[in-house]
Length: 118
Image (cartoon, rainbow, N blue to C red; front, side):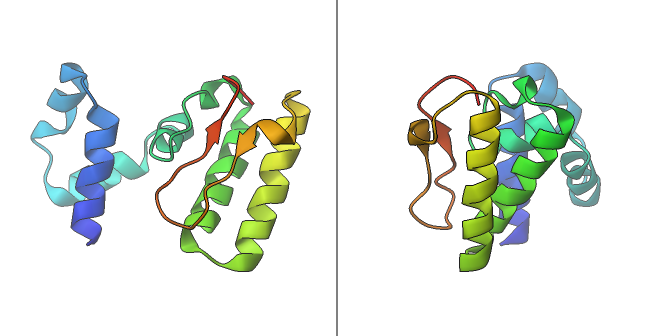
C-alpha cells in the first residue's frame, strides 16, 4: 500500500512534465521516497488538490499541509481543528468561508476553493 501511495505521489509530481519525469526515472524506491518527502510544501499540497498554495506564506502552507494530513487520517477532533484552521486562512485572505468546499470524508477528495486563491 505504501509503495503504491509513493508511486501515486511521484505521478502527481511528474504530471505531464517530461523534465520532472527524468528527475525521478532512475531513482530507486528509497531515493524516490526521500525525493518526494523533501519537495517544497507547495508541491506537497498539490497532492491534495491545492493549486494556489504558492500565494500563501510558508507558515500558512505548512499549517494547511498539517491540517490536510489530519483530515485524511479521519479523526473527528482533527477534522474540527482542520476546519477551524482552513476557515482562519480563508478569512485572512478575504475569502468567505462559504466559498470553501470541505471533503465529505477523510479520503482523497482533496479540498477545493470556489475562488482561485485563499
